[in-house]
Length: 88
Image 1 (cartoon, rainbow, N blue to C red):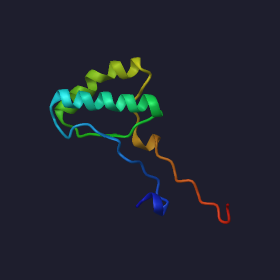
Image 2: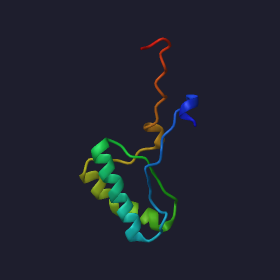
Image 3: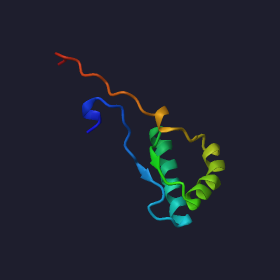
Image 4: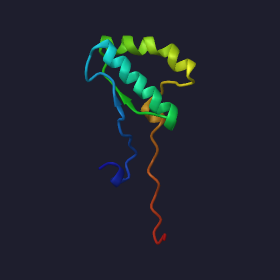
C-alpha cells in the first residue's frame, strides 16, 4: 500500500459515473457534496463522459452556493505523518 511506503496518497470516496445516466450521476454529485460539507473535503473520481461533464456543469451553481469548490487532488494530498522512533 502506498501509504505504508510513505507515498502521499488519497482514497477515492465517490465514483461519479459508474452508471452513465444523468440522474445517477447527479445523485453521486449530491452524495459527494454532503460528504464534503460534513468532513471538509471529498475525493471524487469520474470520466470525461459528456453526461458527467453536463452533470458537473449543472451542479456548479449549487456547489458555489454551498461554499464548496472543485480542486485538484494535489491540493488535498499530504505526506503521511512520520513515525517517531521511540514514541510511546
